Length: 360
Image: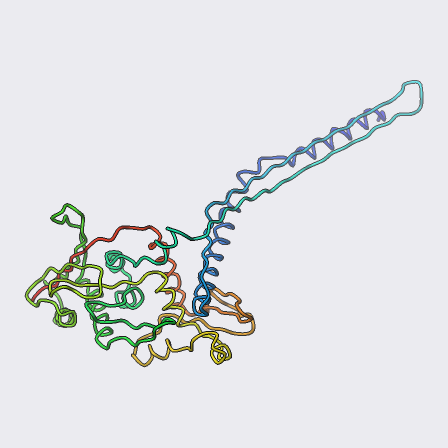
């Protein structure tokens, strides 16, 4: 083959091979980036939440950093160049081939600290009572909802285990939430939205009194007795507060997310050396729940070595803190607490539901 033609063929072949690898990056990146970023944000959110719970237990200030946006920009550039030169009268010719390719990946991730009004609304503001009742209606267990989110109901107090105060729950509190759970399991409870006299929407909780098991009827009576409610009245206004004004109201003193985090932080297994050195308070929560005959809300373990097979783990002050991936209940409670955190950030205004309990 003529040398010139041969060289020309080489240049064309190289150009075709090089350019054949050029195609749009967009479609291929969607599936990969979407799931990888979702997984990364989810895992970092869990680790941040666990770290802040540990910091609260040690008396340190929690800091929450939200990922507000993720923007990823890709670019690719390709270039092929070549030249041939020959002389028909001289036995010399020259040729050169050049190619270059440039690829760029420019992720831009924005963070925003939780502070100011958002911090107050998300961490310091108590969860509205109607939100807790709505979660009950959605199927979340009433007993664990009240243990986690409620400080007191009509003067019947829950356990307090945060750093400043440690107090066992009133014996009637566990009887009360057990009764609420039994009523909930029987499907004899529901909710509806009604119009109040002022025209403001209000939630109504009602207990079904027809065709219910006699044991559930007894549980309903027990709930009315503990709350000090009028035995002949069926409708009871539910409001936020420590004490009801009379026997026609149910006052629920709900907790803020900061209180909830503090309570769950009391279940963290702090190394004994740190307790002895008074770096953090002792481990009383699990023992208190066991004594009361209830399941601990959460188990978070500590160890010097990095644990394996964990749901979430973080290192703090030389120790690893983790939730065992085989501990399904702790995983579920931890995840639910993160749901509550999102609920608290919405800033939904408080409403006054009405609780209906049959007098029979």
